[in-house]
Amino acid sequence: MLAESLLMTGGSGILRTFDRSLLADLKVFVTIARRQNMSQAAIELGVTTSALSHRLRKLEAELGVKLLNRTSRSLTATEAGATLAKQLEVGFQNIDEALGSLIRYRDFPIGRLRLNALRDAAKWILGPALPRYVQRFPEMKLDLSVDDHFTDIVAEGFDAGIRYGDRVPQDMIGVALSKPLQWVVVASPELIEKCGRPETPEELLDRPCIEMRVGDNSRYPWELGNGSSLSRIDVKGPLCSNDSERAVDIAKRGVGFAYCLELLARSEVDQGTLEIVLPEWASEGPPFTIYYPSRRQVPPGLHELIDIIREDQGLPRLVTGLSR
View 1 (cartoon, one colour):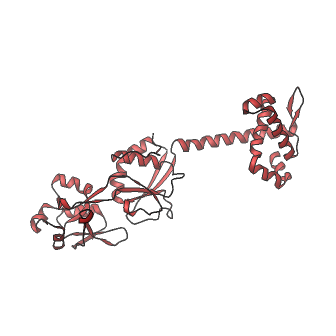
View 2: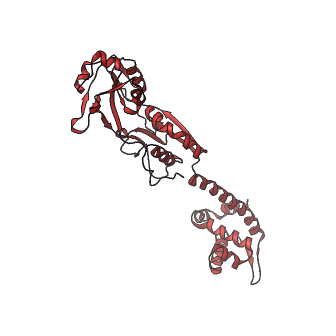
C-alpha cells in the first residue's frame, strides 16, 4: 500500500510525526481532495484557507510526495494523492464506525459483568433485582459466582464483589446495597417449650445452639445488642453450619437456637414455625455492600445494577449512576 511505503521510506521522523499530528493532517488532506476546493474544505473543517494550505504543505514536505496540483483556478489530486485519498477514505470510515460502536458501550451497557457474592446477598438482594435488570439491559450478561469465602476479586478476575460492609477491603470502592441488617436469635416453639425461653444472652450458653462458621472457616460468636451493650456469646451446640438458610431450617426442626439475619427467618416467624427470642437484644450489623477497584472506567452495567438494587431496597440511586 502507498501509505505503508511512505511510512517505511520516510524513516523514524515520519513515525514520530504520526504519533503527534500526522493523522489530523491526513484528515485535512482527505477533506480537500474530496471537496476539490480549498475554500469549501476550510468551511467544512471550520478553519481558514491559509491554515489548510499550511497544513497541506507541511504534510507533503513530511511525506516527501506531492499530493495535490494547485493553481489559482483548480485543485486536483496527483496520482499518488488520489491513491492515498481513496485508501484513507476507507480507513477513516472504519474509524468512524469503530467509534460509533464504542459509543454504544458508553451510552448503553453492553457486555459481561462478573460478580462474586455472598449466598445470602445473592438470594435476598441480587435475585429480586435481576428480572428488571435483564429486561432493561438485554445486552448485558451477568456472570455470578456465589461464594461465602473471602475472594480477592481482582486476582480472580471479577468486576465486583458483594459482602457485608465491614468485610470490604479498605482499598476498594464500597457502595451500600441495603439498609443496616438486623441479626436475631430464633428457635422453634417446641424447643422454647422444652428448654425455656432465655431472658438474657448469657442464658444461651446453657441451651443447644447452632454454631456459625464464617467464610474463613472460623467459628463466629453471636453478637447481641448494640453499642456499649453489645455482648459476644460463644455458644455451643450439636451442630455447626456455614449456611444461614440451613441453620434456619435446622432451627425450625427444633435442633437448636439459631442466629441469623432477620430477613432470612421472616417468613417462618410470620408462619409461627419460628419465634424471635431476646428481641430486645437484636443486633444491627453493616449492610450488604458491593465493592470494586476504581471509580474510573467502572465496568459496563455495574452502576445500573447498583441503582436497581438500591431502588428495591428503598435507597437513593447513585449520583453518578447511569440508569435510564
